[in-house]
Image (cartoon, rainbow, N blue to C red):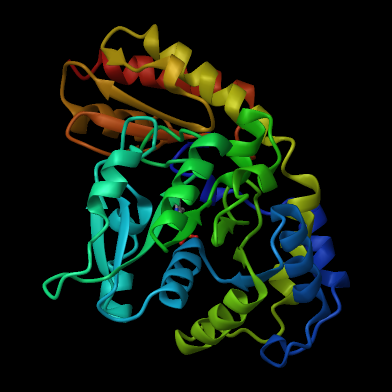
Length: 345
Ligand SMILES: *Cc1c(COP(=O)(O)O)cnc(C)c1O
């Protein structure tokens, strides 16, 4: 049966060039700093983000955890969006493992947190209060339709943070999608932030890995924390080799994923019984709703037709386009969704 897997861009399989790069990669023990391929990836990532140094970690979740642990001590507070991945989907790791207190503040539909809301959440010095240390942003914003945050907005948050002596961490799991969508360089999007994490294993199609970038001293601390949480890896050049191919060859093509997501949204808007807002789709994520009928039945029928995606609410669903999805897959998915909607009433 034909499968069109729109659950996530994490389902991408490595292209042949990555498999070949693994065979050629010079390797060493990276805990001793001796894996040349890991070093090459870290240098490339630092260059692309305009930061001094970088650190390979196993996942985006580990990247955010290690970054936040490196910024904060026990009992410190982090301001972050109430729809952020770190708050919703990272197993409460910063609290469980770091004793760090999350202070969620409502996100706007465009993924931003209004500056006044951030400022109001910053704790004044008071014996009753935890100390605010860090502000976290997310770009693109997963739960906010993959919305890209602009360099201007990010710079404003950074300058607010500076005024209050706080650091800024950017969860840039899909920062390359943001850069391609906005037509700007990644370094412009991460300009003033103290740390940024991005994923190699989503739209960039590498099998494993994320990278943290920041100042040299911060990355040294992050390297210690990574070891503490068991993330020190040995011949990780196997992973890094794919990451280098990802950064060199897989960024430009993200535009194709964005076009496919836009086509999905336009098609869904035309289906009787489904609703979405095509104008909100700026990158590779589409949310839509089943307006009437049984959502469980709709989801089952779509799956039976080979179209896979996540349910994200009582009547809402999410589609993510990626390297494994071409335009004919979009057309096929739309016909299956239309059929499922018609038969779920
Ligand atoms: C996927 C994702 C992560 C976590 O990445 P994993 O590699 O799955 O742990 C973090 N933040 C955002 C915004 C994500 O979409």
